[in-house]
Length: 267
Image 1: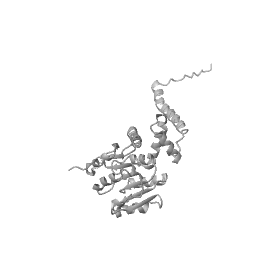
Image 2 (image 1 turned 135 degrees about the vertical axis):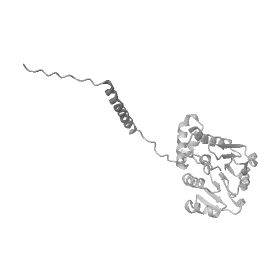
Image 3 (image 1 turned 90 degrees about the vertical axis):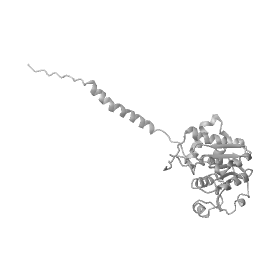
Image 4 (image 1 turned 180 degrees about the vertical axis):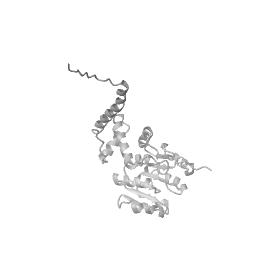
C-alpha cells in the first residue's frame, strides 16, 4: 500500500506578521509620497514687469487678491533680501524695499552700506530707477562704486558738504543712514518736502534725535520685527505709509526667518 504524504500549511505567528507590516507599510507610504511629489509643478520664477508692478499696487490691501499679492511680495523679498533677515545693518531691507516697490522716481541713499547698497543697486537696475549713493568717507565708498555702478541709473558721490547734495530734483525715496549721526536730523528736515517717503535706520536709538524732526511728519510707521528698528515717514501720503506698513507687517505674520542674535560677551 502506497504511503500517503500529507502536507500541512504552517501558520505564521501573529507577531511575525506584525513585524513584516512594520517594514512593508512605511515602504508603501514612501512610494505613494514619491509618486505624488514627482507630479508637483514648481512655480515659475517671477518676471518683474511694469504691468506686474502696476497691478500689484492696485490690488494691495484688497482681500479679494490677498493670496496673489502676498505670493508676489514673498517672491520679491526672496529675490532681493538675504534670508534669514539681519537684525543689525540690514534690518531696514523690508520697509525700504516696500517703499521702492510702491513709488516711482529717483532714490537717494545717504550713507553706503554692505546691506543697503547692493540691494538698492539691483532694484535700481530691475525697476529702471535712478539711484544716487552718497557717503562722506571716500575710502568707504570706493569699493562700492568700483563694483556696482551704472552710467545712467546708479551713480555715486563723495560728499564734503551735505548741504550741496540732492538739490537738483524731487526724490521718491530717501534712505537716511549716514554719518556723522548728528547730520541725520538735518537731512530728515531737508528732505521732508522733497521726497515722497523717508526711511530712517536705527530708529530705536535716541542718539540720532529723530524725535526733533517728528513734528514735520504726520504719517509714520516703525518696523520692529528686528532688533534694530526702521522708521518710514511721509509729510503728505497717508495711503503710502499704510501700504508700506501692510507689506512690512506681512513678514511678522509669516514669521519670516530671522538671524540668530549674537550674544555679547560679558565680563
